[in-house]
Image 1: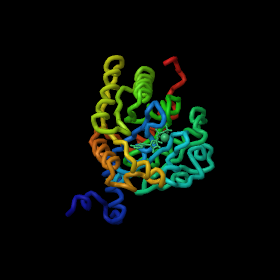
Image 2 (image 1 turned 120 degrees about the vertical axis):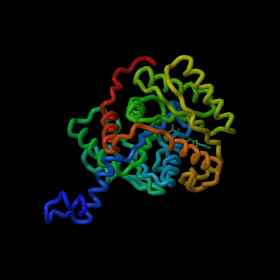
Image 3 (image 1 turned 90 degrees about the vertical axis):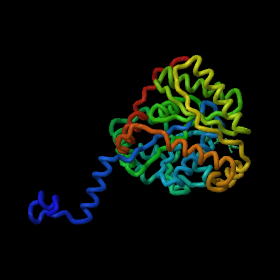
Image 4 (image 1 turned 60 degrees about the vertical axis):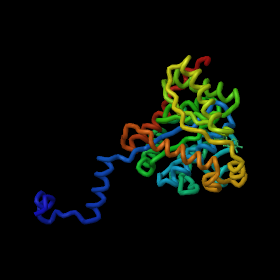
Amino acid sequence: MQLSNAIMDSGEQFPVNNMSDQADGMRRIINPRPLKIIAISSGKGGVGKTNVSINLALSMAKQGKDVLLLDADLGLANIDVLLGLNTEYDLSHVISGERTLEEIIIEGPSNIKIIPASTGQNKMANLSQTEQIGLINAFSDLGNAVDVLIIDTGAGISDTVINFCIASQDVIVVVHDEPASITDAYAFIKVMSRHHNVNRFHVLANMAHDSREGQNLYKKLSTATDRFLDVVLNFIGTVPYDKQLRKAVQHQRAVVDAYPRSPSALAFKRITRNINEWTHEQTHSTGQMKFFVERMIHSDTTQQETY
Ligand SMILES: Nc1ncnc2c1ncn2[C@@H]1O[C@H](COP(=O)(O)OP(=O)(O)OP(=O)(O)O)[C@@H](O)[C@H]1O
Ligand SMILES: [Mg+2]
């Protein structure tokens, strides 16, 4: 006699479907689906954050991951524009209760899910208790359906950018070969480490003319941080300057989709493989997502000092 039959009373049989649902549920509890939460930032504007966010998201999706891309950039070049998608609603409509989170999510190429930029993001800081709980629950429900959450943050070191980076597990700092890019990246890392206790950053060199230029940029930045800050930098690779990426942007497409064999697309694929190897404590993804939204809402950036 099977053990399951031996411990059940007569007639106490689970229907077959329920059994498999339960087994699935048990597997998730025992073996939670890990969730990576990655913020893309830079300090200086225009260095390629949005293109990096989109192309990493698509590369991951093409490798079979369920990806959620959160547009947290209030600038002009938003994800929906770069991908030629129409958006009507955003997070501010979820906060105000006019729409559910599921209703505002749009589907992008390779089935990535996109949360459009919120036009009223400052409101994040002043949510009522009910609004906070609503937002936390809405995001938590998404947890189980997502392997990676990528956040395209805006330029600069605003409270919103800081909050998203504090709430994420990993921060990728995009730099390119221009003095202001390195000094702004340094200033961003300094603020995050000295005032917000974020001490680990990944560095991606974009628009480089060769891989040595990328390495040199990283060296410049890490020489300064090693000298003055208590942080760990991890170089994750170089994306070359690529005319095909520009062409893809003109056609409102991601380069990994439009020109998969182009130098920048190949670089994005390499960097994605590198990211896949990051290991983290594996907490349950629903809990992880809940934690993310709680920190995003509650992060205390009121203690602004002169940086
Ligand atoms: N690897 C690359 N090769 C060539 N051009 C690039 C590359 N990466 C980005 N660009 C170009 O640089 C410009 C800025 O890119 P993007 O909008 O992604 O930057 P951003 O950091 O998100 O800007 P913002 O700070 O305004 O949000 C775009 O015109 C884009 O086409
Ligand atoms: Mg941008």
